[in-house]
Image 1 (cartoon, rainbow, N blue to C red):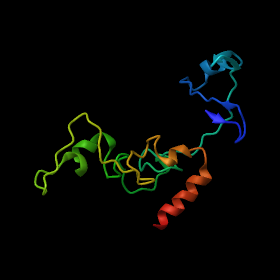
Image 2: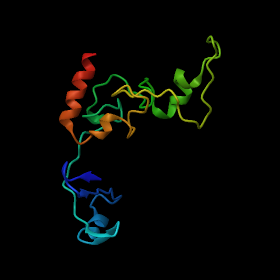
Image 3: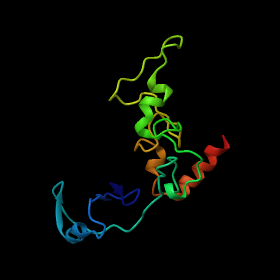
Image 4: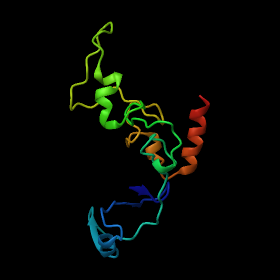
Length: 154
């Protein structure tokens, strides 16, 4: 839901429609009426706004994996040099260390990592998480560029 303005009493609801590349299902819905909260609304096509791309290689915003300049891929859960699917097997935070003082237990298989670190904002979540402030600004390329400039100065 997006408020139409700061003082507006109305908002716009956006829905993702899983569809074919041609958009056959979406085209049949445009113009139809839907009832929400006791109100009848007409379905309209959204204006194209692809937003910033999230790289599936380094997990940073603003470019695709095909244009990524990173030397190695990164894990979206910890930023380590491994694929997300290998995280529990190779990441020190999850595979544990019985020789450490005190010993660090391994995260049980099938359980989520409790030591996540976002490569974008350093938050306690994966880089592809909706909890990330970058996710909330994914349609604001200027904000993302400005924020990376601040992060890189640190």
